[in-house]
Image (cartoon, helix red, strand yellow):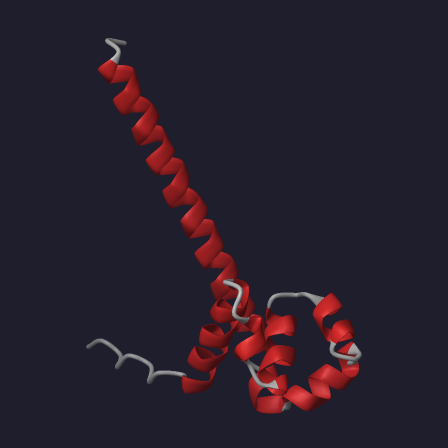
Length: 105
């Protein structure tokens, strides 16, 4: 008998959505608390500094519920970057192969 799938983690999904948006250049539309969380997820202490927060102050402001999800969110985003790089490398190899076949190699 298989286990039931885990229920959706709404906090994690929210953090991931905000982090993706910030990573893609939409940092300005986030609230202060979201910006602090994203800075922690993306490991960008310079953003904390620009906002006038120390690491300790950011952790306190983010709060325990969201802070508990920061490491997992960082791992998910890092994995997405790795998958995107793999996909790009595969596509480049396919393109090189197509070009090689087009010129008779």
